[in-house]
Length: 180
Image 1 (cartoon, helix red, strand yellow):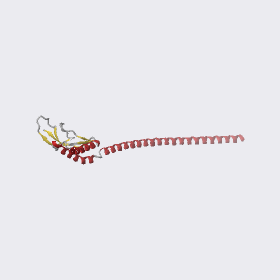
Image 2: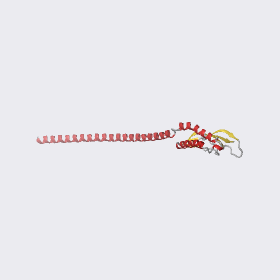
Image 3: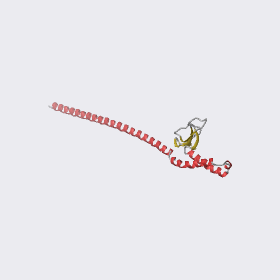
Image 4: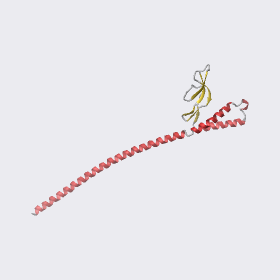
């Protein structure tokens, strides 16, 4: 009988060991599934974070470009208000009689015009060169057509008002007379 009890105890122990082993395998299997799930979530989160980071960097780059453009053209309105003063200097300089051109007082006043032009050039302003060039509607505005012999049609023969470009944008087109 003792043998029977020992055998039963041994079977019980084996059964418990098998149960424990089976439970461990289930636990390990559950842990593996949980780990796989965590790894998938990690990869999704990482990919999402990387996308958002790239989007943020692109946004930052776009905003920097937009800010540069704002700065580039921030002086536009200010320069447009100064241009009539420059035009008046041009008109006054054209009207100076020959005998007054050596007057020191007038030379000093014209030096102000030169300083103003230098300041505007430093701000990115450039004159549109028109005389003798073919009419271009992007840069010129025709105020009169004049019949001229020995000139090709559509050539600028006189500049009534200078035109200017700020950086790469036409600020004010040149008002010109062209040949017919």
